[in-house]
Image (cartoon, rainbow, N blue to C red; front, side, top):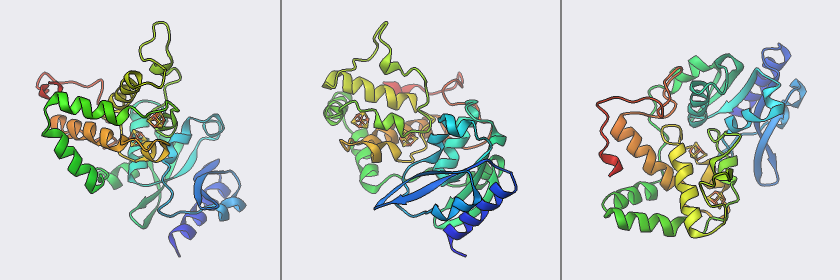
Length: 269
Ligand code: SF4
Ligand code: SF4
């Protein structure tokens, strides 16, 4: 049985037996892969899966039609499982409200509850960053701080403030985003270099210890800004300075909100 045939069979079984009310997966539309929400077993033939399925489906758990259909089964790669673990640790989902249709590499690993999914990814390394991103991280690390700041200002200046990055991110779920507060206004909403720099840095800092390097934000960005470079920069600081990897386990305390007197703060300088 192929990977997608096994996912369809498990999805249909879960729906037929009433173990879940909805299956979240991917469908094909022309050359694109889009999210698919299924509530009937006879709809599973529309499910597809391939390397073009870049969206991180836990993002859809905040939608009303999904929240009202818990428990749900959700197709996830390791980055998606890590996102689920972050959401559970932040009390955004109940651990028993999701079943994971788990994929690691090209292998389907079956239907797992969140604890079993956490065990599955426990010893996997964080999502790899592209070789050009890794090389650029080293180059940035060797730069004087002022040059590094200038690099980010230039790189982020073309942002149009469409917020597709925010909409595509599973852990960007605030109902009242800091960028839309106007009393007082904290971040300028105009698509101009100063506000663009502030927005993108605020977004990335809010994801510290929460970003799972799924890549959905950069894939969604119409300006093709180097968001994964920024995310990977912060992920590297969090991992190397605090030995913390986002979404490593169930019931893990959130990174922001946990501290130790022994924390090394030299990364701020
Ligand atoms: S910030 Fe980007 S890479 Fe990180 S979890 Fe959100 S969408 Fe994925
Ligand atoms: S998706 Fe790209 S252009 Fe749109 S707000 Fe995010 S960084 Fe800016």
